Amino acid sequence: EDQVTQSPEALRLQEGESSSLNCSYTVSGLRGLFWYRQDPGKGPEFLFTLYSAGEEKEKERLKATLTKKESFLHITAPKPEDSATYLCAVQPTNFGNEKLTFGTGTRLTIIP
Amino acid sequence: NAGVTQTPKFQVLKTGQSMTLQCAQDMNHEYMSWYRQDPGMGLRLIHYSVGAGITDQGEVPNGYNVSRSTTEDFPLRLLSAAPSQTSVYFCASSYGAGSYTFGSGTRLTVV
Image (cartoon, rainbow over all chains, first blue to last red; front, top):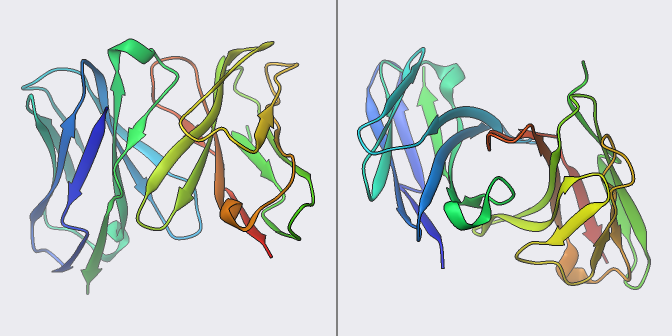
């Protein structure tokens, strides 16, 4: 059974204090790993797709990396507007594009 | 370009009532899905569709029905609401690369 575990559950940082969020996964075959951002009362918003170990993607203050067992979302010099819940999801090869298995998320709070 | 539109945003049902959650997308996406989000459990797939006329079950399909008569619309029907179906429901669509666009959700309470 596919599993995604995210840590920590919650993280509070001072503005400008860099850190990383972890996503550990177990999947029979990985088609893709996805990062989403979710603001309170809204639907998840797509950030990145990673397909193979060693791959990295960047967007503004965010950088996502992938190994064979986990992914990290690095946040550099965060600002208060980066506060959100960050979700990780995997897409197995045996299910095509139909199914994502999500973790429970990391709730990030950036304190001004 | 509205993306994925869900209605209603909020709904309260009595146990045993039925209702339909509406979902429409204007991006001509083939793939559409319904997820529910519960505290501490993450998003779980209810039903999905890979194109008009084609639907299948996800992880938690019991108590829900779907149909896909057009590319744009993918309604979710609750047959006989139960308190266990209290949740936030999200509809999502994708052109096939797995990067889904989500709607803003329907918050459902069953009393």
